Length: 288
Ligand SMILES: NC(=O)c1ccc[n+]([C@@H]2O[C@H](COP(=O)([O-])OP(=O)(O)OC[C@H]3O[C@@H](n4cnc5c(N)ncnc54)[C@H](OP(=O)(O)O)[C@@H]3O)[C@@H](O)[C@H]2O)c1
Image (cartoon, rainbow, N blue to C red; front, side, top):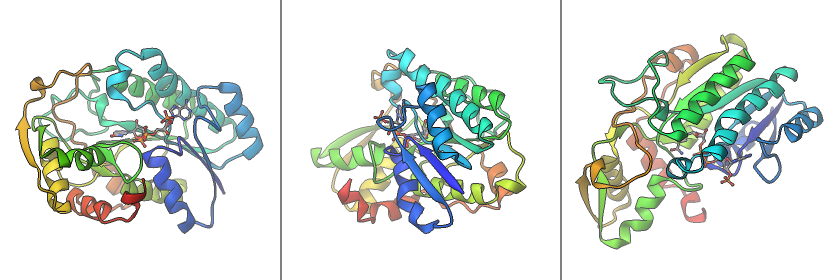
């Protein structure tokens, strides 16, 4: 089977590429904005006709949460309209479609981890455009599987873990402790996606699933863990979100309930600190 991965230079796409050699039964095609702009409907249709994939994993997204507040049109084009175009193309090719979404579809007012069926209420443009992209994909293609994830990090691209490491030589950092969630190592999510594709025949599609690593922390705890595991000397002060001026509002609590994905696919999910330690020990970190 041929698997098309869009947004392949990003964190998740790069991780799937790194792992793809382990899955030689499949032929992978990796594209990013330079080779397949997912907002270009004609290019998407042509690419599908040329490759005829059996599965599409959409890792492409407009993920700059702050910039999205001012760049609404681009965020909408990439996060809302394009997933619908991909869903349609996948439907015409009778390909399975996995689309990745976010915990930022929630407003953070829940006192308990969010289930897939809980009320959504995004606080910013990024979350709103991603939510609209979920809905469009599910409407267009009944073979769509949506995976919402949170706090993604990896050796690739830009992410919180790499920012903390880069800033650790400043000697002191302020990090918010009133936003609670679950970090997700892109490696674990990529393996979960592969597992889902392997079992996709047995699964009822047109469904949303939640996936993050196990456990819960604040960004402050996450920063402390990164520095502690790496043995870096840097003072970290816990601060309130209100002490930082940001354009985008973020949920104070966005922990995802993962019972559904674990039960449906028989997945065992690693604890966030164990995965963080593994990621931080990877030689890849020095290369990217
Ligand atoms: N990062 C997180 O903390 C987080 C949290 C929850 C959910 N998610 C979701 O998880 C998924 C993967 O996130 P990620 O962190 O791997 O994202 P990422 O690192 O920002 O990668 C996204 C990729 O999509 C590409 N892209 C943007 N516009 C495109 C277009 N028009 N056509 C084709 N490619 C385009 C980007 O290219 P450029 O860099 O050139 O724009 C980038 O390579 C996304 O759906 C995201 O919304 C992420």
